[in-house]
Amino acid sequence: MSLVTRIFTQRAHSSQLSRLFCLLGVVSIAFLSNLSLAAERLTLTGSSTVAPLALEMAKRFEKNNPDVRIDVQTGGSSRGVNDARVGLADIGMVSRALKESEQDLTAHLIALDGIGIIVHSSNTVKELSRQQIIDIYQGKIRNWADVDGPNLEITVVNKAEGRSTLELFLHFFELKNSQIRPQVVIGDNQQGIKTVSGNPGAIGYVSIGTAEFEHNRGTPIKLLPMDGKEATVKGVASGEYPLSRPLNLVTKAQPEGFAASFIEFAQSTDVLDLIENQFFVAP
Amino acid sequence: MIDRAFSLGIYAIIALVIATFGWIIGDVIIKGISVVSWEFLISEPEDAGRAGGIAPILVSTLYVLIIALVIALPLGISAAIWLAEFSQNQSHTLHVGIILDVLAGVPSIVYGLFGNAFFCIYLGLGYSLLSGGLTLACMILPVFIRTCESGIRSVQSDWRLGGLALGMRRSVVIWKILLPAAQPAIIAGLILSIGRATAETAALLFTSGYVDRMPESIFDSARVLAVHIYDLTMNVTGGDETAYGSALILIVLIILLNTLAQGFIDSWFKRSGHYR
Image (tube, rainbow over all chains, first blue to last red; front, side, top):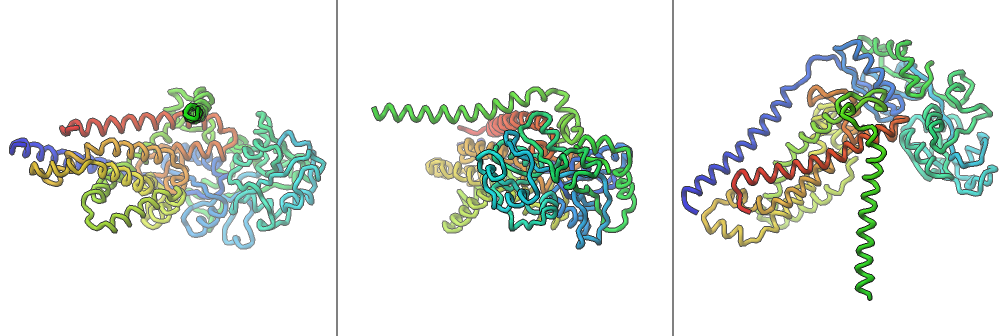
């Protein structure tokens, strides 16, 4: 290689490098200079059940108040409580009533949700008593034949730790999670429905509104009544159905500013259609 | 006879693999195509994602991916060059290699937790596209470095020696001979990285977040496609249709990005007059 070409290729090489670094520099400056300073920000974290509803409420609120940005993040009710308490979030989303140990927080009720026991639609079982459900979840009853059902092994579907559906279920049946012998552990509602609809021997528990919607569109699941009361959204609204839970927004102190006006908005009649669209019941 | 049975078996396995792949793609296309339209691509999600489109989610996905690649590519290639060419100490190379292999096998949720603890909380970046991109960069680096390194290593020593014998500087040998020769490996690494990054859910749910608004800067929290699909299938009642639509877009996007990446690297090497 002659001297000329060597110099030429080396120059080409360095210009290539510098071009690359220029590009990187420009990209990063373009990114950094984009710092958003304009809007006031509200952060909501917590229950994945509440999150889609809160997101829709937030969108409508942003439309009315263009200089606010509301960030909704999920992660479960326990996280909502924790983040609201330590200040990581302005408002926590909690899909159950606050416990004794959480009385330092203030709950703001925005909707109600019922929890229904679901089985596969091919299952001939019509009703289960509280004791039967307890025995099934503790692994004492392992076959549907023992509760007047088909001769089929029972697959117990339980919710993951930290989910408020689990806590409510345990509280209602006076169980401890360590007593439950599940075959499947799931996270979100829709996952529960998919697990049960794909397994004729499965039993699980999910939000009633979700289950009702899926049942009506032909997903092979059915809701079992509880204490003789039909598991329907109507039953939750009238208060007849026993296994229901409040969906709350929680704050550490009395909310101020936009947090206060957002909570007020979330409890107003302006969002009734949103609550209905997410298959919940307005309080 | 045995030979025939053997080759028959091989063909059967290939048919099975292709059928599985075709089934997955076919399922997504059949169930997703009715949702996908131009309108779907350019409008915002409504009703928790059941209606409307995915415009902000597409934009966020690209943002996160660009951030991850801008950080991971230069770091990855440099690290690979160091491992393959510069590190004198064999045991160092070995140890770094083992660490990289372990990191490559770590489940993505662990990267998500690390990203959440380090970028979001410790560095105070919060839920943001930047946190997500940085987390993804950490996640794709090990695989990318390893692929590039093995590509550079597999170049015959004659080429290095020939370059040096001609009086080329070491940097020129690397830039002009080794990297172009390792180009297929670099492209493979890039494609693996893009695929892994674009399809990532677990690591991004806790770093870039859940907000489905159009991002205004990289410090905004935003939802990427994979998180959107996950939420629609697992959390939002009646979100399956749009989930399939989004999945179809995700597949098309990955194919498109891979083609682009390949073209980009090709032209990059061509423009600077490399010999192949």
